[in-house]
Image 1 (tube, rainbow, N blue to C red):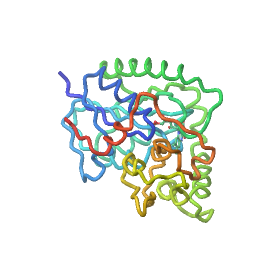
Image 2: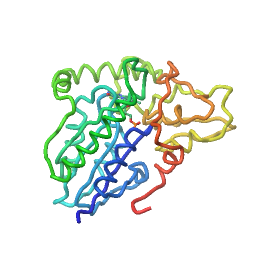
Image 3: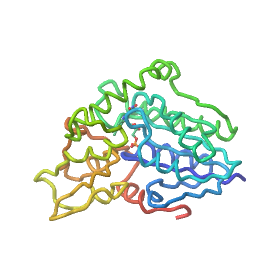
Image 4: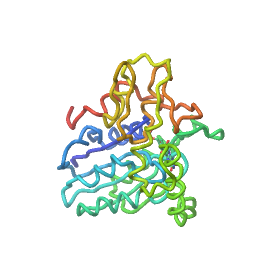
Length: 283
Ligand SMILES: Cc1cc2nc3c(=O)[nH]c(=O)nc-3n(C[C@H](O)[C@H](O)[C@H](O)COP(=O)(O)O)c2cc1C
């Protein structure tokens, strides 16, 4: 039987829920990407490798980029990417493919799964329907993986084709948004990748903060320390929104959550989030 590993990164649970469904259906091990972020090399002996993560700014999160640059897979391995998104993910899967190719083995297949938007309120969003459809989609992806389907199978091909030519201008507007969000000069001359970790420069904890430290525990990259009973961010932010959304007293504020919108996947627990940084393969 094929040895299968499903790697995942999540901020608010959508990608973990999809990764779980895939791991169950493909009888694979579920492995958090965050737990191996400090390793220089990630060697996998699996026959089938899945990489499940959210899109940020129609691109690949920094932690997933680092993972892709370090993954050493067997030459015969079948590697597939699964991107969760709230609207459109642009050319992110192709970018992941290029990153993996630099390691000698690109994506064999890529899939998108439309999930609830975690960054802002979409008034037209029907969450129960989105969950139902994502479960159907995960089943279809598992079947495609069992058949070793190849190529990029976008959920909404028309939308993807329509936005692809605008990838560069979308990137420029994301850079402007991040410059404002991070409080840097604009134009800063910084790339998207350089600006993303700086966004936490404007994060604050209100007087409601009890110093419980949950924000530090759920941060997938250990970017938060508690000093004098308050969180301090250290400019390695992934923009995942875990700290905002798992705060038990809703005390955190910052440029990405000005509208005080909150989201977390209903089946993902605080314990799941804390384990993301500590669980290793086989745990
Ligand atoms: C900083 C940030 C940027 C995002 N950018 C996009 C985007 O460009 N396109 C999109 O469809 N969704 C975007 N989203 C929404 C997430 O990709 C989507 O809700 C995802 O399923 C969240 O996954 P998670 O719960 O595993 O973190 C963004 C979310 C965040 C926090």
